[in-house]
Image (tube, rainbow, N blue to C red; front, side):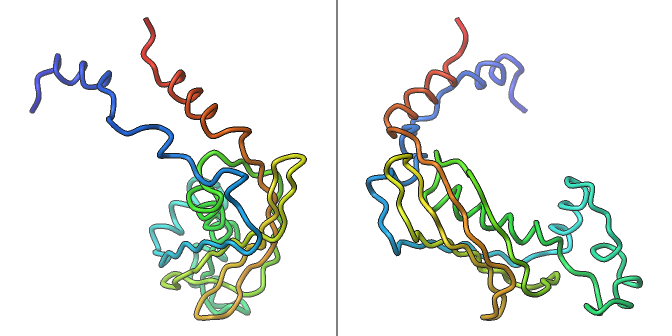
Length: 175
C-alpha cells in the first residue's frame, strides 16, 4: 500500500490528457443525417441499481411472481432505464460531451426484459443555428423491433475552446 503522503500528493497530479479531447462535435461539425449508436445488454444488477437510484420499486419491475400475473408475463425494465441509454448516445457520442439536453419526448412501444440487448440510436434531423441547437430522432431497438422512440433537442456550447478553458479553470487546485 502507498504511504499516505504519496496518496495525498496524487490527488493534485494532473493527467496529460487535454480537456479538449473530452469535447464532442462542435455545432459547425454537425450535419443532418449524422447518427450514433450505443448498445448494452441489460442485467438484473442494472435493473436493481436503477430501482435503487430512482426509488421506483414498482413490483412490475422487481417482483417476478407479481409480474407473471400481468400482460408482460414477467418483470420488465423501467422505461426510463431504457431511455437513459439515449442520454448515453447524446452525451458521449453525438453530439457528445459539452451538449445539454433541452427537451426529450418518449413513446414507449414494447417492453424490455433483463437479458435484452438494447440499441439506442440518435440521428440529427435538424440544425437550428440561431440558438446552436440540434434536433435528433431517437430510437431504442431490441432484436430489430422498436421498443421506444422520440425526439431530442440539444444545446451545443458556443465554442469548444471556451468550454475547455472553463473546465481547466474549474479543475485547477486552489492556491
